Length: 203
Image (cartoon, rainbow, N blue to C red; front, side, top):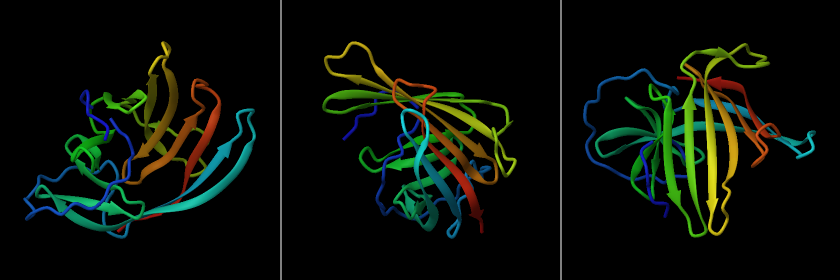
């Protein structure tokens, strides 16, 4: 399994339910992503060819299906098997391999990095948060959001120059992720995939 190297961001890996003990009382925090059983977000995902045009698209719904207790804290499980919660650091994901939580969207820290070792490469994931709410470009719904500039840097064995993939995530308070944009590796302006929020339902 990946080995944690340095403090701080994301890797949205699938997680499985881990049972814990009795829940402790926790100080309430303002949610970065609103979480409650029954909450759902429907997205349109569009893929793009390296030379520019869209090639295909699909829609999917992420929903919160149940909650659980891990280490006396409340966590929420989604239909795509993520285990997530809001805490003082932000919106975090539980990593089943390391049994640690990684910050997916930071609340206050504007520069977060995690490192992972794999058999043939080392991966660094860095997230930079824009501290100011900004209009989401060309948003049909007119969302304003915090932008997270995310960099995936792959250091392959025997290769001197790392390979880098850029992403951007837009997170709107009270709504959650409203857009994610991914670019082709080593082509930071060539769009690969765009995920756009179509609708959401909160309890």
